[in-house]
Image (tube, rainbow, N blue to C red; front, side, top):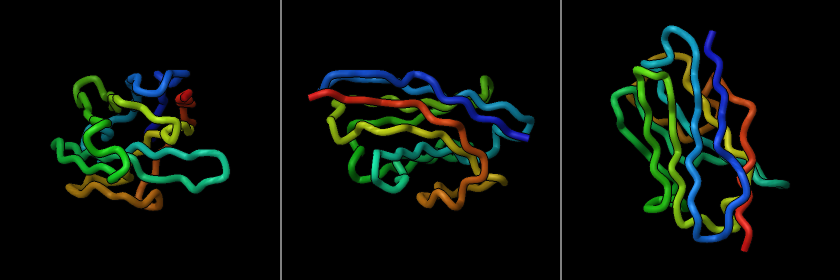
Length: 125
């Protein structure tokens, strides 16, 4: 069984930065692809960034150049460094992991099996 717990959300002014963390538990988590998704009120959950267990990454166009995803397999941690934040980035952010080892970064939430409960990020203008 794999559990994911996000932390690091909060309130920040536009132009500011936040670093989200995702603590994962479970023996095989280090070989699973991890992803960050977000969901704003009234909107569907959307892909933000993903990373394979070997470090391959993929980003949504809306966050390219502003967000950086990383992971520390030894510590079973995932991170999302967010810079130049905009009010449009306000959402609940979720980390997720695939069920099996893969070399792909999936952008569809249906490809992820394990999910955290989310952390709120609010960007004020």
